[in-house]
Structures are given as structure tokens and as C-alpha cells.
Length: 335
Ligand code: NAD
Ligand code: UD1
Image (cartoon, rainbow, N blue to C red; front, side, top):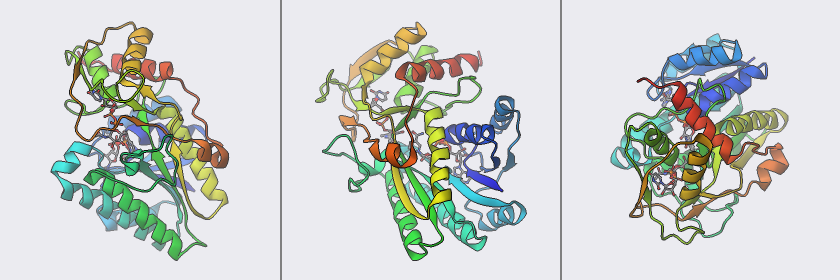
């Protein structure tokens, strides 16, 4: 039996495929490559010496997805595929609702049709919005502030209804990621955003390569230790391993489960810049700018539930994260 990994060529998906293959599981990837490259497959093979099956299919094409389930023996699905850029979702809401919701509805229908009821879903800490109480627990009410976040909230609600309608069958694990950064230690796979990045680590990486001349720190007047924004950064390999724990969980128990995946520790923007400079011996010029609209001061996870129920504890340090992010870009320089 195989695990179907939707979006398996993307940043988190590719790292999870590596962990699955290294654990001896068989993998079928479905990805339309709208935000990833086919070359990732060769890199996965180079790391694991195993070749995942691959279908270049858009999940919005239900019949094509159905045919994959007819051909392959799939007993569980990890669903990463989706569009994820917050700003873009504000400008193009329909594309986000269309892609993220239709693909998930198709997937659920086809899974039911083929008696496949084990699903791990990629959600995000963005479903919590601007919370008042830290660290953030899973029972914090939803509060989304952009169409991307709302697609995640809506999908979580759809999954809850689906599990409620058929509790004996469905086994669903919703994972709310905090801020994934870093890359595989081989430097073969990592994060490769198009254009000017919005997120902190990809931006710092581009400054380290002198592709951008400085970082703008969005505000140093927050109510945090040094005034800059605090987030819960988690190494993508730790995050990938969290998916194996989630699969283990739903293979044993039916129902629907929700977990935060983070480290439980917050780091400020300045701490990230300083760690990046110290570990990689490279200068990151920065200026202090205005706050970014919609940003919050602090966001970090309460990780107790994932620790107690999944046995998941992130093991990599901030130094590992900044080292691996830099190693990936150094190894994949095109100039
Ligand atoms: P990514 O863009 O690198 O990977 C997503 C993959 O899905 C891409 O390879 C893309 O080509 C594919 N895809 C998109 N729509 C598709 C469709 N309709 N059919 C088939 N393939 C499709 O993103 P990522 O960072 O690896 O994120 C994976 C998931 O985790 C996403 O659902 C994202 O919303 C969620 N998430 C990411 C973060 C983050 O910071 N990276 C944080 C929280 C949640
Ligand atoms: C972003 C997403 C969020 C997603 C999360 C995890 C946005 C608006 N939100 O949030 O939906 O769940 O990633 O992937 O994109 N910063 C700078 N300068 C920069 C970039 C960022 O100072 O050039 C600061 C931000 O103000 C923030 C921190 O760095 O304090 C992290 O920012 P970012 O990487 O964009 O992540 P989030 O804001 O947590």
C-alpha cells in the first residue's frame, strides 16, 4: 500500500516524501507543479536512493485523480497541495478559493469512492489570527484575516463535518504549522520562492546572496523583548517527521485530531538575523521600517498536545535552521 502525497514536489511535501521513503513506506506524488519543479524528484531519489511514483495532475481535475486511485493501491493521503501566498490571496481570492477548496473536495470524494479514509491535512497557525493568549492552544477559536487563511479554516470545517458524518470510517489529522524554515541537510531540497519573497527567511537568504541589498525589519516597537516580531520557527525536517507521527496516529485510531506543529519557542526577527550572521559568517544589512499591515507582535505554539498524543517533539535548533537554509542556497547558486 502507498501513501499518496499531494503537493509532494513542494517545500514541505518534498521533505516529507524523503522521510516516508527513508522509513520504507511507498509513495505516490500528485502535483501539478504550479509552484515547484520536476527536478525535485531526482533530488529525492539522490537522497533516498528510492524513486517515488509521480503524476503531474491538477487535483481540480477529479477524473484524473480518480484514475490514479484506480491504478495505485493507496491507503492514506497527506494533502499538502494548495496555494499559500497571503498577499496574492488578497488580490486573487477566487483563484485561492477555487484551487484550495475544489482540490480538497475532489480529493475527499475520490477517497470515499475508493474506501480510503486516512488523511493528514496541512493547515496553518494563520487560522488563529491575532490571538490574545500565548502560547496558542488548539482550542483557540478561528479568526482568519485573509482569503488564504479562510481556505484553511473552511477546509478544517469541511473535514470536521465529513468525519462527523462517518466517524467509524474517517481518520483525519489536521496539522497547524507554525513557521517552517531550514532545508534538508544534504542541501539538495529546500525552499525556492519565485520573485521577491514575502517571508522572513527566504528574504534573509536572498540578502545573504546579495540578490537583495538589505532586509527591512517590519517594526521594532512591538511589545516584545527587543521590539521586533516574534514567531515560532520550526525546521522543515522536524515538521516532515511530524507527518509520520500523524500517520501513525490515524492508522491506530479513527476520528479527527488537530495538532499544532511548532517548537513552542518564539524568536524575534533580530534574533533570527543575528543567528544567521553568527552561524553562517555572513553579514545581513538591515533597516528598521514600518510595521507590516496585518502583522501581529507574537505567535508561538503550545506544543503539549502534539507531544502527549503524537509523541512529537521538534529536535532541531535555531542554529540548525539558519545553517541549513544558507547551505541550501549556497549549494544551489546559479551564478
Ligand atoms: P509549496 O507551494 O512549496 O507546495 C505546494 C505544492 O502543491 C506545490 O508543489 C504546488 O505545485 C502544488 N499544488 C498546488 N495546487 C495544486 C493543485 N491544484 N493540484 C496539484 N498540485 C497543486 O508549499 P509548502 O510550503 O510546501 O506548503 C505545503 C502546504 O502547507 C500548503 O497547503 C500550505 O498552505 C501549508 N502551509 C505552509 C506553510 C509555510 O510557511 N510554508 C505554513 C503553514 C501551512
Ligand atoms: C506568514 C504568513 C502566514 C503563515 C506564516 C507561516 C503573511 C502575511 N503571513 O506569517 O499566513 O501562516 O507565514 O508560514 O505572509 N519580517 C520582516 N521583514 C521581512 C519579512 C518578515 O521583518 O521582509 C518579519 C515579520 O514582520 C514577522 C516575521 O518577520 O514578524 C516573520 O514573518 P513571515 O516569515 O512573513 O511569517 P508570518 O508573519 O508569521
